Image (tube, rainbow, N blue to C red):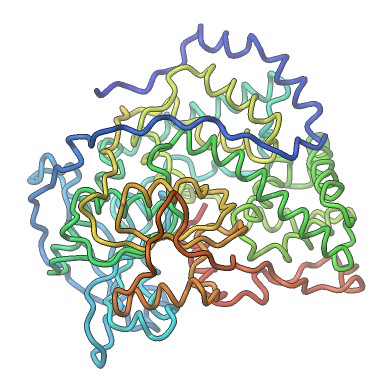
Length: 562
């Protein structure tokens, strides 16, 4: 049943402030080490039958794409073509208002067997996939050569038209501290969240048609425009949810899908964020332990708990004494990537060491460069909100959000409140939410799923659940790793199996039980690139030094955009 996202009433706000002292007292002791064991919230029971809408398909026939030149140097160098796909804003009114989806194509090598069109999505939602038509270059053994690689900016993103934006200065620093240990901070974040949602209403009618199911319909239109009877897909992160839904709705149109960093369809999206808060705490501990293991390079201590305590002490200092544009929230955002991937651990450890020595400039520079401001700068975030806020219902009472955040913050203080405020506009979103279709892969062909054991963005339990729902699928586990969507990073155990699947459709055998089918080494942590003597300069080396397929990692990082 459709219902509006509830607005925050005066009574609810009063209730929210009523237990404020409890949370504030808790925040005051945030620096103290959290318990080593963190318990996840219980999982909701999965539906026992598919939603009827899962089988609904659309009959829209798009006009051909008029291919031309691309604007970016990287796509030009790859010989890519670019164009626009015309689709309905509302598929229930296919003759009504049209929007444009920006598409890129790197054509297959004519000297090898043609394998069809391979769509690529980098994640998000809100990530720009237009530049990822070059992904085939990074697949081992020339296994990508037989495909037309298709990048695209999903509706509302990047070069697609219209492109969403709400407030291009939303990340302007310094912002209030994420952890609202004072009523004034809490009120600021409530005001910011309500304001952002209100400004987003200016995007107009398209906000009503930004759900994942609409992008899946666009993918089907893209298949038709390309003249293919089936499509292939390489989906990272949120792109795995697109793949799940497409395969549920259009199983006969699925050829070979690779889904890396698998979204749990049971948890979309409020509960998924609660899961992330817990998982990021664990992955950040892995980072702090690695820094401690390399004390000779970074000089931050040889005990992971001590290193962690130093980082929280730095964050606490910034609460009272921001350094330029670097406050405690900005410091959290700079180090968030350490919880996502191992790629920048060396760089971030150097940023950490510089700040510990009193030099905050590298951290400030990292935040400013990664969070541009100005007209349209929030496009990725605006699309993220437009999709997630309407894909599924969020708790109607703000008190639920608040109490969940304070409870999780006790054991997971790194990301809990930052994640809460990142998603808070959904509580005041100007468009109704609805439940997306049930994910049912019983009719889908074999697919390749990939994830690491301690992936924080898409916890590994989601990959296990999708493996269950897609009974022909095979799951590769990067054992013990914490890197999110890290395939094609040079781990041969994983990458060679991707290549075999794309080249010939060959997959490892599926095992009996609720478990992964293949266990591989995870993406390896980098080697420290700085000596104790060089560390005194206070200038970190470049990001991703020594990482295999560095260009690909930077392409994906840039594509996700926020």
